[in-house]
Image (cartoon, rainbow, N blue to C red; front, side, top):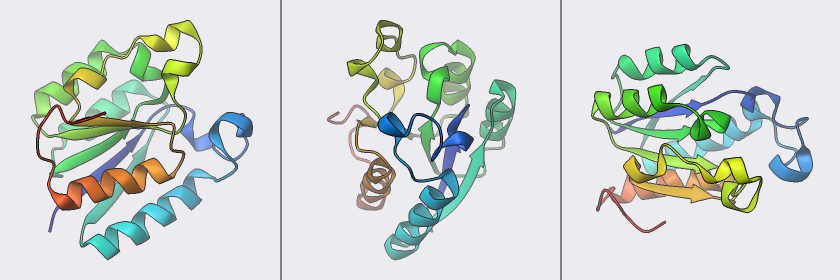
Length: 148
């Protein structure tokens, strides 16, 4: 059974109350419940980890107890070379997910340290993006630099 780590970055614990016009009204727990249900339907094993601390996210990746990751790095997407290096260093494929589409937002969000090393990026789909990532994993990841 494919083991999937869903890695959630800073401030995602505030979902449901943080800028709901951008991120929606679902809480992180509600999103995780939906992910777990869809993963079970697809025959995937899923584990969740969220932290507001860059080092904790990196330490979790270093455990390497998963086959593939779904990563929503939040604001670290635009700032963290260390997270990028960890994702490269563990040699596990990952799909980048963002609830909103960072490319349509503030100019500083145009910088993305993860997109070019991700299998694919799913942006602007809200919580559905995680389900799309699971479906991609269940179907086989295919080309490392698949369609965005």
